[in-house]
Image (cartoon, rainbow, N blue to C red; front, side):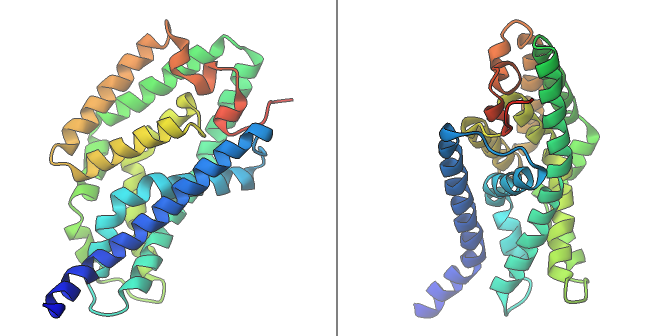
Length: 256
């Protein structure tokens, strides 16, 4: 009885660790967002990257927890260090994605500040680009790698060297980025610090990767985004990050 319960608990431990990390990241993000009422977040790149990294950990770790757990189970010992190193490599990829995210958010902020009416057009473009990518073969390819990682896990087992677990996590993170960057792009329209948008997109990411009809969900999300690209022209409030006139929704201070 004891041996059976131990066998059941051990495989669940790595996934549980990632879920705890995600919960901590969600808590930090919520508290940080609430604290912005007294003043906007600094717009410096290091601050943005730090906040972005925590946000991505909150949104992406629940969906990747099963893969990290499987990776940890490929060896009988030292599973916790393996999953921590794997997760570090994974998160590093999403942290690096903060650089183009910062450029996109800053660029959109400058355009809308210089031409207030341009926010709606930018929002339509964001929805259109995100929606179109969701329907591409590259999206399907990367999503398939995330949904069925067994082949990749076998390849990771051949990695050697002290950084092999970080390398494995980074490779998986690269496929995940290829799968989900279009969904993260929507944060430019909805607002980078919009907790409701974060929660909704995190749910979509998890559904795409974990549910049996994940590919269909991805296509449905793409079509919905394309519809929003049209509707936002008549209902600009659908993109508060670009048309709401509040730069703090984008995680940025008012432009000078």
